[in-house]
Length: 131
Image (cartoon, rainbow, N blue to C red):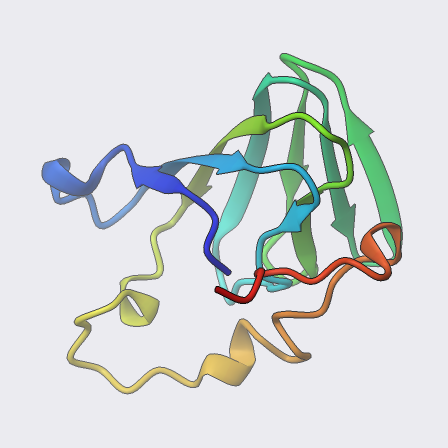
């Protein structure tokens, strides 16, 4: 969904843990997804974070965090006019879903609904923007 992000553990080769920094521009959202086995911890480093977990919308303060279980739909989004920076850490790493994986993963396990679906807080917003 064109969200700037950086893999913090890529060079370690870890097969047990993933960690990414996600910088959400104003009026943007990540993909709506869940995981087969992976728990994820979402931690806000800058600004205020917004996310939906299942049917609940959460506001996460700077330096606040949320733990999300594997089978719960989740999506971080930014309905404000300032950037938000998240650190998202997950374990165990689901290497079969990574780009370049040799195994054929069933993507419906992590995307059971349209992953580009935006939360109601971003109604009327076009994300990602058309070039």
